[in-house]
Length: 286
Image 1: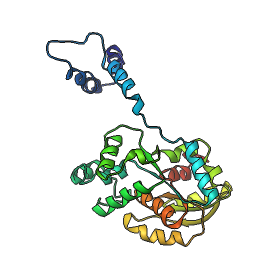
Image 2 (image 1 turned 120 degrees about the horizontal axis):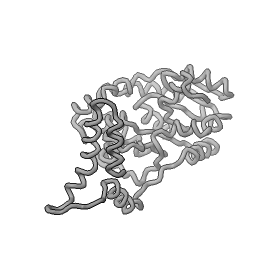
Image 3 (image 1 turned 90 degrees about the horizontal axis):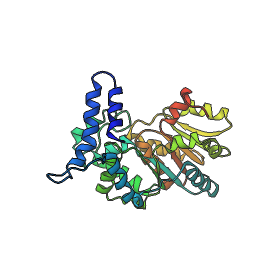
Image 4 (image 1 turned 180 degrees about the vertical axis):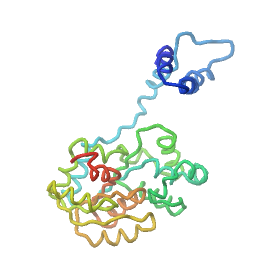
């Protein structure tokens, strides 16, 4: 974006935020460019955005393509038809911060950045939890990763994977919002129709009622997952249900549960996340 347009945008920001906006735009763009300009030189009439565009063209061959919702749906249906195990897991800031604690970031910094981790199922990241998460990611059939390049999303993704020796190029990648993508593309109900569906998570009962009104066969319901330590109980109860596909909405433990449901029980498991909440509350509709 040309500097003049940045100025117009900054002027449009209300109150005292305008100065901070201008400073942020400068520090994140032109100031970085200035570090590469040799002494006693200027680069006339070339904005930071122009340099980014030129550099991006150089790196375009390095772009990694993510599986689309339709492609993931095809994988899910194919596995269900063939009665083949398949796990689709998703990595958001909670999973990445749990993995980053005491590895690529100090544990205290993670506690400050992620006070929500206990709600997400990890009261405190431990070596055991991190190892279980890393193993689940390594073994999952499809891994949802964040599109956002923000510090706690892609800013942590690749350092964390590298720390745990996970080669991202060998993973089957999709978006971390693949759950919403399947819903928004109208693919969710067609995947579930004609299948025995197991629901896991705090909204499982309400979601089950909703799905049944849309002709979905709910084979079982397992309520709230009380964090990482509750995984063995949930797996034991899961093994007692005759089902084809599990929708798991259990925070960070969902990554481990999905992988174990596929690997140990030979079933299909989808990390369903907050889509369960939004469907139950009516914020989103089937």
